[in-house]
Length: 374
Image (cartoon, rainbow, N blue to C red):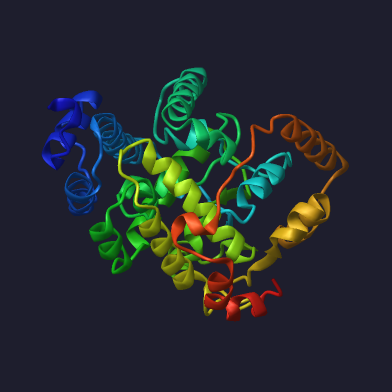
């Protein structure tokens, strides 16, 4: 039972055993109880799915121990300056492409996946890279169709939910698992504590490899923008926009693929309903140029990003206050050529698979489509 035991006490004991640390205080234990209980009771995971869920929860606890210990023991770590630029937007709106493109700029610091998977670790870089590559290989083995949906590479940046989710407060869990009880509970929570821990972890990453401004990306910031601004009031925010009648079915397909790697039962219509409602929470009422951060956001349309990537990069650099140099352009051009060569297949899906219609989605998001000229 040990490999599939989701009891919070057992998870904590395993994390402490792995770290040899019985003293460092752990946080977010009520959140762990809420999440682990929902996964255990609601998600319908097969054995391998439970093993993966257990390993992921233990890994987050291990990260907490490492980061909290490092914060306590490294002088000045809590004074490391963070100048964040956040890319966000509904899932499947081009945020990954834009982040990867901008990460080629030598004057922007965009932590790679191997870094955000192990904040607070003292292991050598090459060991962390190898662990990250093993994780990616196992992820694609469990969910082979995911490769055509979202490309993971150890040396490219990834979503910073890798940091936020270590607080056990994040909707990435409601994407991975069918856990409606947790999803409803999460809607009622403040994300300020999660963002505070995000910042604490980010400081450990930047202490190891300094750089500013630091470029981060996660769709969830669109939902949690007010709470993000309480922790990062001076953050700059880049928001991407795409017709939800395209984006919503795409994220539904991604969700079904991820859940199928963990459970033999995937309710596609439930996924459609979940994402339709969740997207409406984030998008309807959104206004151009308005956010809670001190600097107004930069709003970009998906079609402009993919239609003129270098022109978009120039707009972003102007917004951030970093010149788009000839060397940055050269690196971005080379990256786009290499990315085209790495294309891994066609992502196929229809709205109808998820109980949705194109027209119905357009009607639900009519104000948003008008506001952002989509």
